[in-house]
Image 1 (tube, helix red, strand yellow):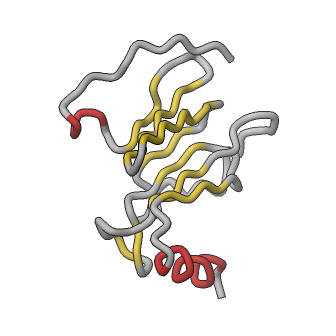
Image 2 (spheres, helix red, strand yellow):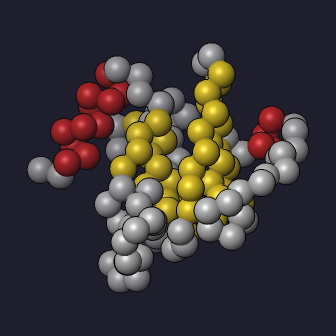
Length: 118
């Protein structure tokens, strides 16, 4: 049985909205997933692991149904939590925005200027 089949029901039962994993040595994010399907009330999975190791170039899962964003670059994830609100900003080693979730455009506001030093 795949690990997802063990963990997903437990995460869903407890209302976990975001999960971090770091296996593939590259950035990836899923849409919200529940019962192994895309669903508005599901958990979003962030894949991290792009620092201090070689970036994987083979065995990519970027074309899988559950991948919303994918990037092979060193990156950092900045997490902002304010009460029930959460925001995730992913920035490359060069200070470029790779991804943001939820997308700021959906909130009707602009991304802040970043001073990023890695």
